[in-house]
Length: 174
Ligand code: GDP
Ligand code: MG
Image (cartoon, rainbow, N blue to C red; front, side):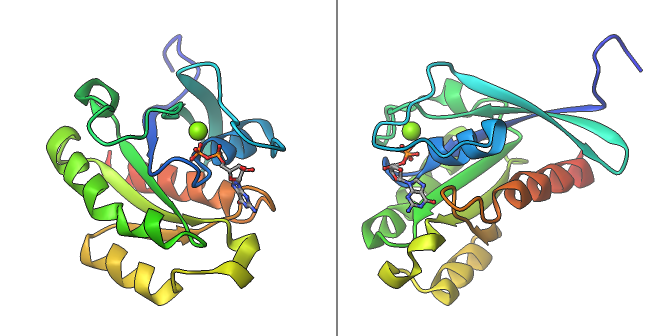
């Protein structure tokens, strides 16, 4: 092994409308916290977490959009060199789902062709307020060749799985 203490290094970038829970997903995964209240913004560009998959150390560099979610204000530099994208919407917010084609256009324009994209429907703890049916989201993801997962950053549901599945997929494609 080299001086670097990992076998793989992957850059993962979170995108999706403001308020869908991107920052909370990152906090939950990297710090095990669900921050209360609004405006949970990480004060740095990215967070690092190293996971172990089948005995190999996989270092994940996770970039959060830090409040720049408006289309076209996230520039090419943000997408450049991303190995994976976590495209997030909120299952209780139809509007966040309807915006997905806009995000896909950005991905097509700015990300590299090899990028692995996973669609995430967050806030499944609020299932009684669901506006986007799971089947509809699954169909959309499949049509776009994306993986699909539903999560709750609040209840820590599927958050670990999200990043581990992504890491496995990235190793497979590496
Ligand atoms: P971002 O703008 O995409 O980074 O969204 P945030 O992570 O800042 O979260 C926006 C709001 O949604 C905050 O009030 C969070 O507390 C809330 N939130 C985030 N994830 C969840 C979740 O899984 N369940 C619930 N009930 N609320 C969540
Ligand atoms: Mg945020």
